[in-house]
Image (cartoon, rainbow, N blue to C red; front, side, top):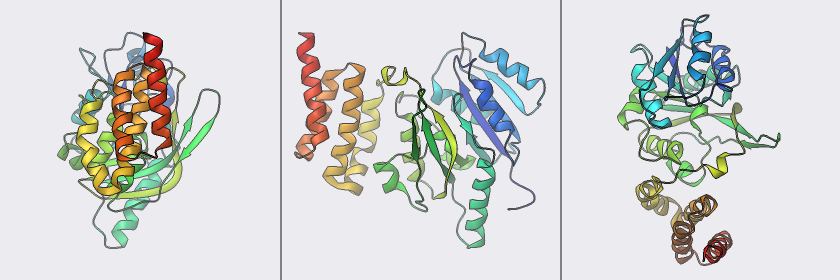
Length: 298
């Protein structure tokens, strides 16, 4: 790795994370390759999030707090953080306010960039790592991939590249318009799909980020922007993975709708998926759950 690493800004969107955000910031501070700055965007929190950030910033001038006057959601907060990052920061390292990095995460990503350079390959616009999804009861699920180069087909089928696990070239982030604030659930998957359609990826096949799952997450989906997400990517999924691949995608989001209580939307997606792939057992199960939910409401 070069002795003069590039300037990197960690960008942390936060809303009512006073009890958790210190852990995220500390993990950014502990990187073996230092962040040039750590930009925290407080999305109009009603708790002590801002006070916690200010306390940490008093001892580390790299930490900068930006406040939203109105709550705009995580995508707007991430976009604000990228805009507010110093112009010298050519690379952006998103970090969710309840997640954390292993100390060598950034170092390993820069080593991957160096590997591409030494091989005479074009510089990728994104370097991602594996991550572990850690439930509140201690259960863990490891997500990792070694796919590199053109990874669009991979990210359309299996989403392993969470925001907290990527290092993104700033010009690539800007070129696709950043995160879409109109997609309020699955916005990170949408972002990675659009990014993969515009640039190449490098992989670090190690678990270097921790995604902390919360008991409330499965019941807190805001699916208002989901039709936009599905409409945007359905054709590409079918192109790369055929009818069965699109059906799997539809079943996955039908299940989310059903869990959120919107059985009508879940039923539509499950029926669409079964039209594409009549043998889809998961789709039959989701459709049945939607019908049971509908019967219980009558």
